[in-house]
Figure 1 (spheres, rainbow, N blue to C red):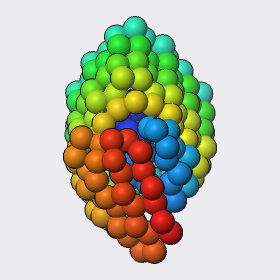
Figure 2: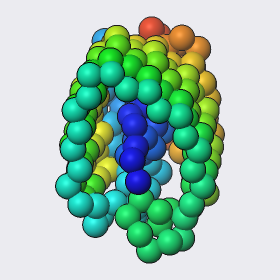
Figure 3: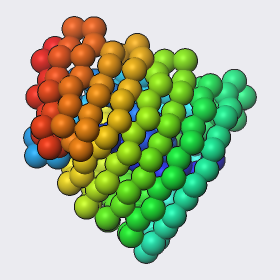
Figure 4: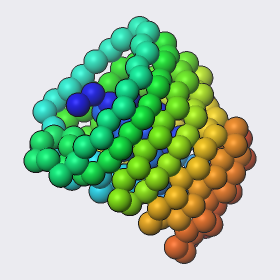
Length: 186
């Protein structure tokens, strides 16, 4: 199953071959970069991809539009129930994945993604000038220049953003984001 990184973070979707990529918590974000301890998306990544074979790609330009609905199938990328619709296009994308590890770098890109799982529902539009990200199980790190617009709601709380500015509130956390820089308490 192919994935594309549409991370407002993040997913991220970090489609991320990883729609893993959708809302996350425990964030340190400064100037468009972040290091995050993911919960719902990290759990999905581990369940879906612990046996993922090595995948890699490098493309100069790309465009993808797809819908996907799956889950509860003992197959890489299809174990965790989810429904996804996404469209994404950009210039320059390098991607490598193995098991629960993912690393990617992207040039200018824009995309939209809708994702629903038993743990979370989200819809985001993202535009980035550039980004580099990596994910290993529950830990996700990303550095980039971009803005997100959308919302996410699930077991980790509520996130609302407009052009990179917004807030997150959840069990024991409160965060504010202004033009890609985020401060989170809890």
